[in-house]
Length: 180
Image (cartoon, rainbow, N blue to C red; front, side, top):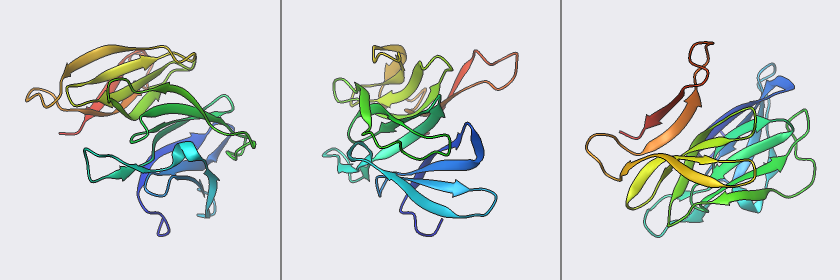
């Protein structure tokens, strides 16, 4: 997508799977790609998508991970340290209400990509200056670490993405990828 600054998250629109919603984390916007025609358009911009500088890094990141479920687009914003949602139409367009924060990272932690269960519970790849791990956040915004380790560990790196298995045998297993 030549007009994009930095593509990061991607999700199909559940009722219109030929549409993909793509997060542009440097522009702070959401693009919609029509896989039938190749047409790309910016469909949503919201202050909660916006990139902000991170004092501890030279990266200015905004919206990151995205997943669509049940009329909602769930998303993370790395540098704003938040997990939120925005109501969307069956075609992946905003319904006109602003995005809302579900949870904020605590103690300087940031959120990257995440896995989303059908019941709205999310498992977010997270990291801070001292700890990395997977944080479970309920639909009501209650969070707790379900796996954690020392940041900078030589055994396992910072998690960047999470996904549930796709087969009947592993659909309840959470897999995650790391930065190293």
